[in-house]
Amino acid sequence: MSSSSERWFGAGHSTDADAGKAGAEAAAAAIAGRTPAAVFVFTSGGHDPTAVLAAVRAEAGGAVVAGGTGYGELTAAGATEQGVAVAALGGAGFTVRAHATDIGALGPREAGAAAARVMAGVDAPHAALLLLCDGAALGPHEIVRGAYSVVGASVPLVGGLTLGPAGGQLLGDRVLTGSVVGVAIGSDHPIGIGLAHGWRRIEPPMLVTRCDGVRVYEFDGEPALDVLMRRYGTTGTAAELFAGTRLRPLGLSRRSGEDIRSLHAGDDVERSVFGTAEIPQGALVWPMEGEHDELVAGGGVAVREAVTALGGAEPLGVLAFDCGGRKLTLGDSGTAEEVAVMRGVLGEVPFAGFYTMGEIARVRGASGLHPLTLVALALA
Image (cartoon, rainbow, N blue to C red):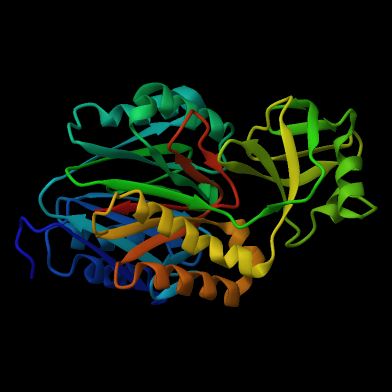
């Protein structure tokens, strides 16, 4: 057992069919008899999140307990559905606080801002704000902007969108919907964030000439649905263009590469297409594609970038936020390969996370929503 002053990070995982037993097993493995400052719990559809949360809290003592439900869980043990993944951290130099806000009552921007105010009073040389937001709520980009309006450029944002009404956001003893959970993490050691997706451009680019929020009406002055069908060499209906596992990612031009936006549906009458994240009018965008090996490699790139951002400090552990759309595209064998790549980069460093409806990472600027991406938070 470690001393109370030794910094530590642990991860645990269980696929037991009993929700309470799974939560207890995963939490016990992550905590391993130590005193945690924070415990993060991730689960998916097969388990009652209330039972999972109660079991985790029984192991966690007085620690901050937060998390969410998603499309599955991932740890070094592998990627699963209907399981429980838990990460825990503790020891000297960690400050962790958490707060939940109601999106419906406040609106998305103010809900993000109110959740970010949990950073107040966290006086540490290194800090990050973890956001777990209801993926079914409107305006996730506004939630991120609201949080940024409070913490500014000095505090990076990281996190993901949960499954909302199908599951929830978890905080303390509560399973929430329609909420933003903000977790302030302060540390006297470095914190690093990495993100990667593995998608590449299909040339030539397109100009967004008419749009409204998440809906695009025109590319290059033509109906958006018609342009996409032509670019992908398909005919028929919008439902056929977006059927099954046919993800239609768009890449927005950024200095550091592309921000990904996921288009998932269209309207046959108005010939528009739409997704979950805002696409700005006047943006230069590319249809994106990715080979299996490139998408798998993205997991390794993200965790390596996060560890590199520690500036040479040894990583204690990593929280990972991967996309449910990537999981769908890669399939069971591909997600197993991705976890193996992450394990190859991290070695014995523990990691845990879940598959989300959209990933949050903001290191520079106010933009921070990254669908179809893997985001990693490394702690030293």
